[in-house]
Amino acid sequence: MTMALEQKKVNELVDRFYDKLLKDSYYINMFNERNTDIELLKNRQRVFINRLVSEASAQEEGSKYHRLKKVTPFKYL
Figure 1 (cartoon, rainbow, N blue to C red):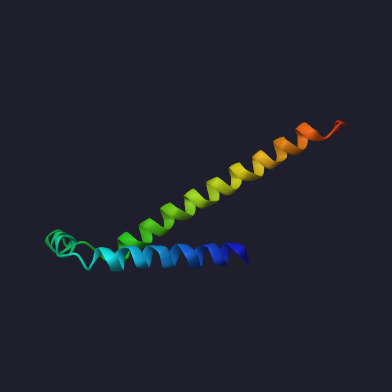
Figure 2: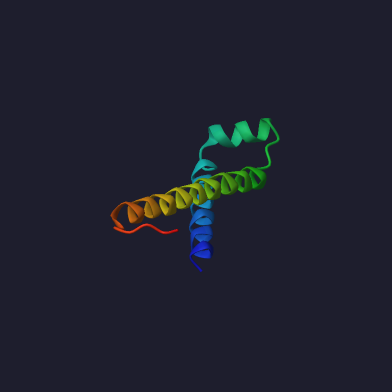
């Protein structure tokens, strides 16, 4: 459930970013001159952000484990 919610937030963030970017004539002209596929750029950005989010989550989980291990007075076999 949270992954779907995070994906929705990422999608909204990327869409808002490109909506604002495409209101600027400089970027409109640059993308047109380079025949840039905006949807491809959006998808790449979504993938990049999702990787950052998942790496941060994994690091956070590892951090929780180390904190728990540090405060737990007994050892596991």
